[in-house]
Image (cartoon, rainbow, N blue to C red; front, side, top):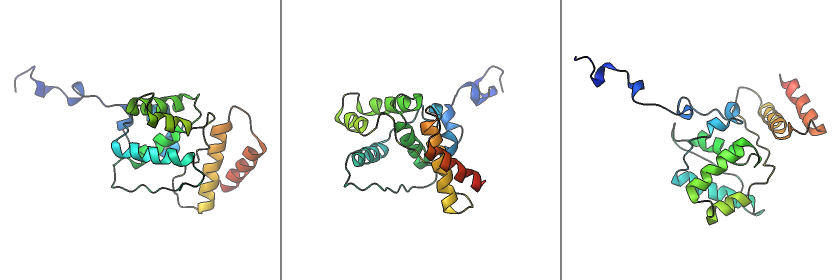
Length: 173
């Protein structure tokens, strides 16, 4: 092989990957990381699901349980992570990063963006994320609630609810 040809250099000299593509999304680990949302692409199917979910937030009679199914690697966890980011407090870096993605996908003044934005409370929603483990389901739910409450209300100090949930979490450990 002749020196200086393309084939004597590693592929890493020619290609680069965003951090989000290095490993799969872990909902519990990545819940507060804006970098895990950067570069997310709202596909046509994800956009449709997002619109359905956002419209249900404003309608008390709407169905609020969804199932996402698909083969391995099709973006189910990435979409779930994106939703948790979008419904973070609006003034957080995470919430702003996710909102920018919607604005780019639909357009800042579009009907879709207005509907989605109006479904997001300014303080966000309580984002209880849990990955199943070998433990009773009640422990998994208590752990998810404890982390969600601490993440949501960390600036305001611990309320009585935070303290009580924290006690549950300590009992589980």
